[in-house]
Image (cartoon, rainbow, N blue to C red):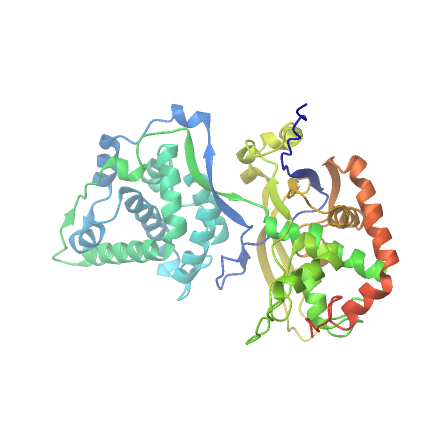
Length: 476
């Protein structure tokens, strides 16, 4: 008699959360660092499909030639523009038009922030922000004018300006990419072009101009398609992982072991122990890993299921990878393909991410001596914006680790949950709910908390003395 084989198929356990903001959400992009008082919302480059793109005509060679003919460059400038792409040429034309329009105002002093000796520094900073924030050249122009605090241009410039701002969508996407990534060189070329043209007009022997020629495909990346690359506002999975899992897992553990987290180094546990649980810890400079590091790591992960869940490092070695994968998406039309079945049916899934970004300005009042006033602006998600979070536990995750996961998420949901930053200033509070919750797996949380209660003294001492329930001091 042949026994029926038992087939085991490893599978992940996936949970889904929906976070609905009840306040605006601030989540700045750490990659955008400059001296301006504006901060952009975090963004990620993304290929976005748009069925309307198929109906958008590609930029024809005839249209590209007309654009070049309408913007002849002085001979010395043409030499510098000869080797750039059509998209980069259009980017320089747009910025040069801005410089032409606003430099001559107020007897040559300019207007708004585009004035005085710092005008080009302000232009560079705001141009980068506007190009990153906008999805069209019209939106880019409006943001650039708003953030530089300049008024509307004269009506005699409308035809030349709108002929550029109204280019086909595929071309606009490539031009915006050039403006956002090559802002410094674009401003430099536009400034040089403007200055050379002004000098030529004043000269008795003006420098001849040249009509440049570019392949239209270099301004579209090819023919029109259904897709374009955009810098889409995004919620960082790393930020969600900390706020939804790591921080509440530590608070839950500290509460059940009767510990006071306190200030780093001033609570019941050493600062390195608290760092391990709060942010993953750091390996000490010059530390040497012990020969039995693998066994020690396994012992620590077995003793503290929340470390088994999230991983981390101690003074001299790594404790191994996390058992949970975190992904987060802003609920919007750009992310429709990535949203789960339940989240894709939400009303917010039909809105563009660019439509739910707001500009916010805050002020810090000066003291009675007139010192300390500060004004700064940043982008924030509108109140009511939603974030879809998918949390996946790897196959064969131990029951106690599974319980630590559920305890962390439910602790987060029960404690006025927030996402993003600036919570002290009234940003980021959300209402969270399970879209796909633990159900019968809730028993794993009960088992985890029972384990903590049965081993409270041993686990507490492992944290207080930095041994993490091993024979060595691994965190000091």
